[in-house]
Image 1: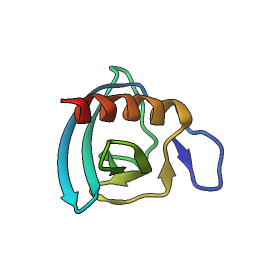
Image 2: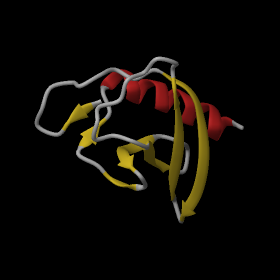
Image 3: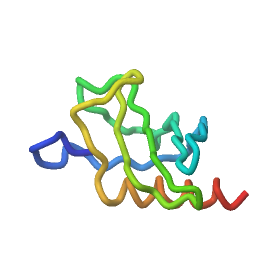
Image 4: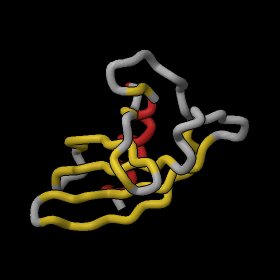
Length: 95
């Protein structure tokens, strides 16, 4: 994850996602509880990070948001983290 305006803090590997999907007309909001690879050390100001993903009706990701305790945070996902999340979202929408 990267702090806005900064350099990458760490590269997270996710082992599981727990989704909560809400439909907003032609858009979907997918809130994901994230499970991190064992041994992942989060920065001190991230205690309970999760993700909010905004998707089109076909599951195409429009936006990724890092949440901290359910609220917007100062962090954003790296390209590798986005790839992990988008892969999961594709599988979720294919079901």
